[in-house]
Amino acid sequence: MTSQSTHPTLGTWNARNLLTVLEVAEWARVHPKTVYRWIKEGKLEAIQFGPRTFRIPEDAISKFLLKAGYDKITALPNPNGRE
Image (spheres, rainbow, N blue to C red):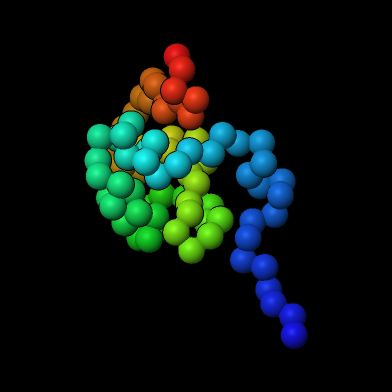
């Protein structure tokens, strides 16, 4: 039996910084459930690694904010927690 891979190809995300749902929620000052809802609704791009494990590419946050009407994005979340 063969199954189709639903995972992105390696080249599409390996070079990008990946953030957790909690990191995005803390940065956006929303509840993590809100971030999960954005992912489910297709508003925020995410990579699913398991049944409940998502990572959000840093550049997907920029795209999300631009679609939401923000013109200038000055500080994206830092996945390492450093400035």
